[in-house]
Amino acid sequence: MTIFIETDLEGISGVSSLDMVASGERYARERLMADTNAAVAGAFDGGADRVFVLDGHGGGRNFLIDMLDPRAEIAPMDAIRESDACFEIGAHAMAGTQNAFLDHTQSSVSWHDYRINGRRYGETGQLAVFAGAFGVPFVMASGDFAACAEVRALFGNIETASVKTAVGRNRAACLPEEEAERLIRESAARAVKLAGSVPPFRVLFPMEISVEFNRTDYADDAMARRPDAERTGPRTVRRIIREIRSHDDLMI
Image (cartoon, rainbow, N blue to C red; front, side, top):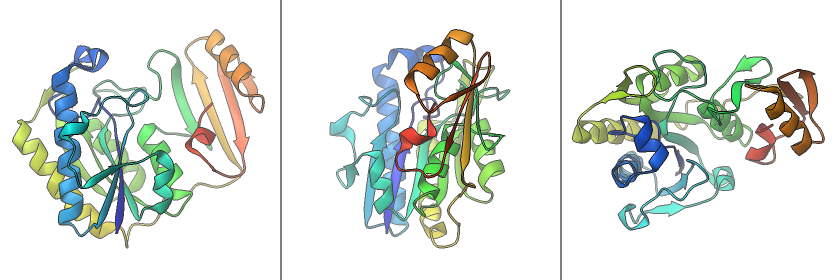
C-alpha cells in the first residue's frame, strides 16, 4: 500500500496568522514537518508500506529535510500515479469561503474563482481530480475547520483532522500542538483503510476549466500563456481538455 501526501502551509497546526505564512518563518516550517510526520506515521500505522511526500506550498522549499520522518520519500506530483490513495496535509479552503483561514485558490492576488465543469473547486479539489484521473482516491485532509468541511462536502465520508478555526480571514485559533498531531496521526491511520472503499473522484470529459480573475490584465496574461485558452468575459478565461496528463493540465 502506497500513500501520496501533498502538503500546504496555510492549514498547518500552530500557523495562526498571515505573517507566519508570508514570511515562511521557522516555527511555521517546523509545524509543517510535525504535521507531515504525524501523517506519515499514521499512514504506516494504518498499514502503508510506502509513503511519498510533496512540499506543495509556493513551489516547494518549505520542508526542513532533516526533520522529515526518514521513512518518507520526497517525490514529484507524478508519483501519485504509483499510489493507492492520497492525502492533503495543511489544506485551506477555496477562494470566497467565509470564516476560513487564508481562503484562496492558487493566488489570493489574481484568482477570484476556479471552476471545473461549472462547479467551484479549491486546491484540494484539484488534487482529488488529478489523482482520480489515475484511479487514485482522495481519502484524507487536515487543515482548518472550513477546509475540512469543504472536502467532506465534495468527497463525502473521508477522513479529516481539523487543527484550527479561523478568526476572521487572517488569524486562527489553533489546537495545542500535541493534540493536533494526535488527530492527524489517528485520521491518517483510519484513512489508509478507506483506500479500498472510497472511489476515485472522477469528472466528465471533455472537461471545462475556467478561472475568473480579479482584474482584466490577469486574464490578458493567462491568454498569453495559454494558446489553447478562450476569453469568455473581461476577467474570465477557459480551457477545454480531453485528458489529464499532468497537474498543469488543470491550470489556466
